[in-house]
Structure formats: C-alpha cells, structure tokens
Amino acid sequence: MWRKFCKFLLKSLGWKVSHDTPVPEDKCIILGVPHTSIWDFAISYLYYQSIGGDAKCMIKKEMFVWPLGWLLKKLGSVPIDRKSGAAVTKQMIGIFNSSEKFHLALAPEGTREPVKRWKLGFHTIAKATGVPVYLGYFDWGRKIIGRGERFELTEDAMADLREIQKIYKAMNLKGLHDGCFDFMEGV
Image 1 (cartoon, rainbow, N blue to C red):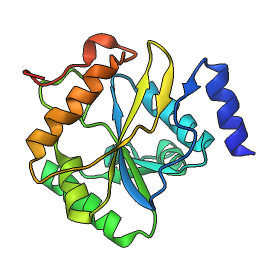
Image 2 (tube, rainbow, N blue to C red):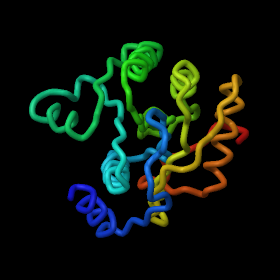
Image 3 (cartoon, rainbow, N blue to C red):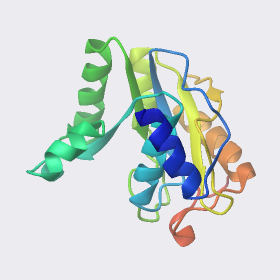
C-alpha cells in the first residue's frame, strides 16, 4: 500500500521514472546528482519507495532532536558525526560491514551549496566494503528520476570521479536550484 501511495505522489508531482526496479544487490551506494535542494531528498525517497527499494541517507546527528529525529529515522536517515570526512567514512564502512542489506543514497557534492570539488568518500566506502556504485539522478528540468546504471570503480579515485562527472554532464541534468550545480574544472 505504501509503495502505491509513494508512486501516486510522485506521479501527482509530475515525475517520471526511468528505472522501475531497485538495485539488485543487497548492498550498494547510489549517488544522487544534482543535489541542490532539500526537496531532492523528498523526491528521491518517494521514488525509491515507489519501486520497492529502501535506501538510507546520511544526515548530521545534530538534526536528530525530537520530534524531527524520530521522523528522520522513520524515513531511513542515518545520523552521522561530521567532525571529519574520515570519521564519516569510517562510520559508514562500519555500518556496511555490520548490515546484511544496506542501500546508501548520497550526494557526492556533499552539500546543497555550489562546490568546485566533489567528495570522494563514496569511492573510499565502496572500495573498502566491496559494494557497487550506481549513478542515480533527479532531473528537475524534465522531472525524470532513476537509480542509474552501475559504475565500475577502479583504484584511481580521481579518474573515476572525472568519468562519473562526464557521464552526468552528458545527461544535461537540471537541479531545482540550477545555479548550485557544478562540475570539477576540466570535465
């Protein structure tokens, strides 16, 4: 019933789905690009629930106060301590290693603000845990959302990031706040 309700809401908001099945693996990382608004979370949540998936996302632990904390946990959010990028990465590796099933949705930009450099934590987590990475997207211009295709990582994180950005750039995606989305120089 919940799945149908999420599908109805997504369609009512004008969104089309390009991948109508969740990721087949028990564990994975799904990138969400472009991340320019808190509404990306809502649309992504509705999408993944509507196709029968259950993805988690990272949110700073300071947000987990009553009553918001209860709601965030119900929606699949994982509280993280952002003292350092390495600490976040270590926390996520621990969660992946201790879980039977875990789909993590995250934004490689690391924030909704414009950035010149995407974060590589997803690469570190994926390589340390052996989980695949999927190139998820939400295009506010065309209102199309999908989990994207699987991307095979190499040992060269920067080369992988450049290739991932080339793929996303070719998709001509629009964020809700389009001026907040950018690629690394040279891509």
